[in-house]
Amino acid sequence: MEKSIYGIGQVKDYEILGPLGHGAYSRVYKVKHRASNNEFALKIIEKNKLTVSKLNRRLKNEITLQSSLNHPCIVKLYNTFEDEDLIYLVLELCAGGELYTQIKEEGRLQEEEAKIMCSHIVEGLIYLHSNGILHRDLKLGNLLLSEDRTLVKIADFGLAVKLKNSSEERNTLCGTPNYISPEIINRQPYGLASDMWSLGCIIFACLTGSPPFQSTSIKDTFLKANDLKYSLPKHLSAEARDLISKLLTWDSVQRLSIMQVRDHPFFASIYGLNVSNMRLSPISRNEITYADYSEQMVSPIKTHDPRPSAFSNNRKTLFESKILPLCTSNLGLTLPFCHPLQHGNLEILFDGRIILKIRGKTLEVSKDGLTVIYEGKSMRLDNMSKHCIKLYKYLENVLEVIRSKTPKVTVKVGSATCMLMWNAPPPNFEVDFQNGNKLCMRVGSDAVRITTNDRDLEVSIMQDYDYLDQELRSIIDTAMNGLKICFEEEKRLIHK
Image (cartoon, rainbow, N blue to C red; front, top):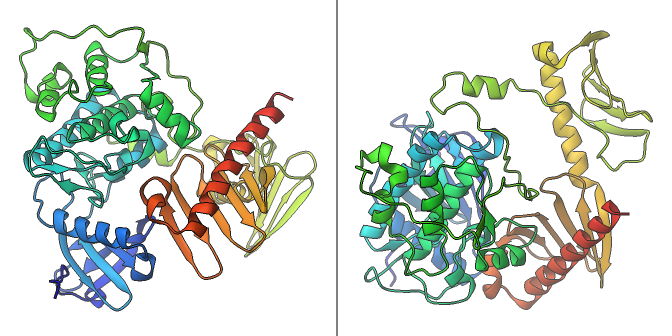
């Protein structure tokens, strides 16, 4: 009889304080242990979503590996338990959220801040690689921040594997498209060096606001990575450019090891290295173009100027109080437009003005979003009252939901209707089949939600495709073909 990997515990031992996020197969909540009053992150997995045996093995692998790890830069797994329907993982609470979210919302990091943040990732990888553990899914979304945002921790060990030795190689295709190394893309054997490629992509994203090979499709991302087509902004230091170029090299043998990264001049100010005898290698201009990174974003990561240092006491306050002007010009609606809400209604007039009525309060916003009239009083965006700001942000969320459900491009692919929505970047994409099947996704993500007559599940295109049945594969294939046609039609409309 197989030994259980689960410990002792019950969900009633914890008080749920609020949601933290969700993945393809799980939801994560902030919880408080009733007996100790300690706070944790509780990851809850529905057993009926682990219908593919490979996914079940991945979860068991995650539990076995992560429970054995103990390092300040690794998210700690404290306990696991199960009941009839659910599996529970009690994890270290990283209240600062994902590094991905921070960069998406606040922009690229200043270089000195990036050095500090990335040095934590380096320390975590030194620990993993010295113990023969290959992570295989390093990305911004799997890097979590402590509550004060001063410490980065590596999370999500679902794809990690323990190697027999540092030279052992694997063949499984896995990872996240924006961070996958060329050897994995080309189905070649790979080892610890594939994590180093991912680290190069992470450092690049921290310094620029976007992964180096990001594109509108997984195929294009892979082609760009295979051909090393990326650009380094002029604002990067020579040390940053040199480090990135030595990590994003096609030959995995030539790629820096984690200890070589630690000793690189880029981290000299962190580790107190003597850089007087260190030389930076020249970078071939045939491989890299030194130009400002201006590729159109296909993920919500912003590339605006870096915000104030992470150690500024005012940064969070300034960001949270920032109000961006609303705009009705890209809603794709036939005006005038009226939409009922739970406690009121939304009206967009023929001239683009927005009128929101909620619980007896009225907010009017001009087409450009710069003029606001609240309860008959005209206000500027920077001097709105607290209640007006609350309504303005609520209106912003309502408009985003409308955009996400309003087709910008609609095409037919066989029996499927494919719709690219107005919200962007990145837009939602939905596919409705005549037999009732449905697929939903966010462009730029490889996670898709598929609904059939008897199933409702989320899968990763990259990691799960080979283990899905023919019906699910056919749904994904049709959707990906439809997405490509939608992009072509969108370009045609733009240049019309």
